Image (cartoon, rainbow, N blue to C red):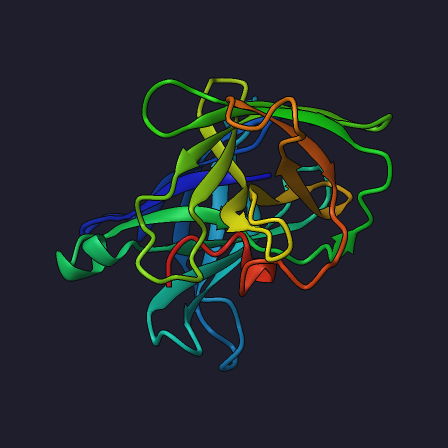
Length: 242
């Protein structure tokens, strides 16, 4: 569960990039400083931050990468702030690339595999404005309140319709998953398919309406059952842009 921003600095700056990275447990200012490469796969950058004592410390490394299918450049980072290593990518929106702006958005890298949903409780409620939803999902191990925000970057049919967000300690939105609007081929009823990144893995669930709820604003979250009706490319739920 990570989010953040990264900005390319002027060539004269000591750090090539500066930014922020957020989770539900921390908000940290980071810098990417160029480092000498020992081989082709050596990191391009050291990721540094300032600790509570005011000392600059190295918290990770980063690589310049290019998307295999899109051909778009992005930055891959491996970071450890004392809670164990994690991976994130810094990507650009289509608008930022077109404007040649050095602005990147940090998104989580899906790598935990798919966890079984098991016994899940949850609810999703449509809000009156902004085509958004608010809801929660819980079991005996976690209890997560979140919002579904319309994905303004959607440009292809397989892209998510919504991004799933929670808040960091400072209130910064953190993307933890994606959601797609779908329709059952058997009943013709609309439902939402959700992919949520949790510390234990990537969780897939559906938000459906029973007979009493149908036509209203409330959906019940139920464990995912593979019926072949999942939206295409649902496994790529945390990909923000093409």
